[in-house]
Length: 251
Ligand code: PEP
Image (cartoon, rainbow, N blue to C red):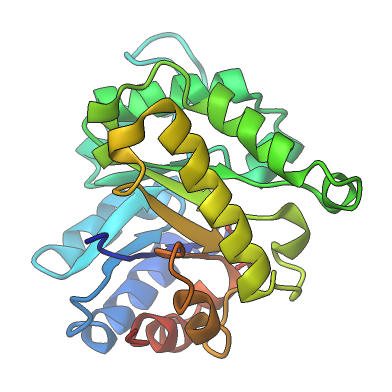
């Protein structure tokens, strides 16, 4: 049984005070949602304050990024995976398409960040996904296959229970245009096949989330698909009520 995961990516939104207020508003709204692993990802500066307020709740905390270096050092502006763990995170998101697109993160960087997250004892949510141009050219599967091979290189089957893959077609992020449940299912099944080729025993257990304009009104269709194990939600996670509506969907 794969426990589904629902993760809210708050991107570069909200002050510390706003993040705490949203987390506190969310807490009672999702208190009975034990059918999901519920995760929120505020900005770095709010992590510790939010962690303190979430103690004892069923909401887990993720950082949206971490440094590729495993240990502390002279890396101005970076935050190590061990530091986000220290701030109260159990999860970290790596390889988000916005990091790949605007900060030029390669699969090699994603791989190093994944390794750093695992070394710090975090659950690592690794994002993959093709652009619209790549989909139109018919290369969506090969792009995702390469991202998985590069971003997850060096992992063994025993690492996989701390890896969550998020399939996020770039053309569906923040655009209001969701992949159809069938399009998403097709790619999720493909991702599971890629894992089966490399690390057969673990392929059935790996959780693959869908991300890209997930909203309260489309979560049901997505979650009915056999290989969709949850969602990474951007815009609709910013308001406690709309995120809670998604979280309170039950398969
Ligand atoms: C995301 O940020 O990962 C995302 C999927 O955003 P949105 O839900 O707004 O498309």
